[in-house]
Image (cartoon, rainbow, N blue to C red; front, side, top):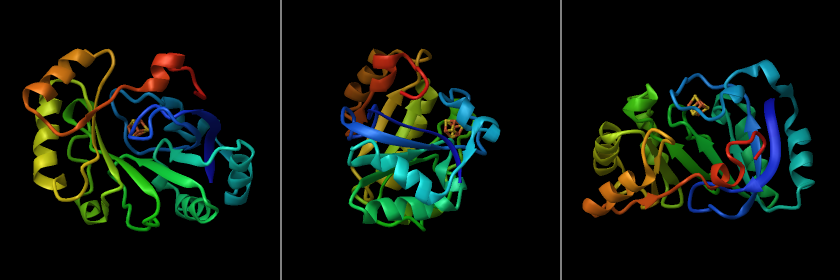
Length: 212
Ligand code: SF4
């Protein structure tokens, strides 16, 4: 598989935020989100070829039970399914972050999926694969990255139409610096939305430093 990087950091997003976690970042992504924070992982230029065995061996060295497979878009690589299944069978808690545009049905149900729904300001509204909806479990998390009011309204409509009976773990995060965190927080409070507001903890700690 094409690997961008493996590192240990503090989980910055999701309901696992704050916990030490190993990140396995696979390379390559077909989307080009306007605010992508890992452009180096969208293309294979700096990636290295590794086997699933190599990656599992590397993960074990970090002495950390929480592992997130991310990208790029990890599910564009067929080996991501085998990697995630083998890690969960080895006793790791496994999260996989995916952009919502790729089929998730091959994933073991013990793996927690963190699925993006791209909003209009990303440039990819409508990329979400609706066939994925039946595979969202109550343990999975759905993430909306919101850059403006249009994104916020889009996220609300999507949530109400597709997610209410799937999971209560719905994450709303502001695009920095396009949207002030307090603006998004106030919109959520005004509408009494049952969503989790989140900031990217790692970007506050390490200011977007690569490998963090
Ligand atoms: S899906 Fe993720 S990796 Fe791909 S362009 Fe968008 S933010 Fe970047």
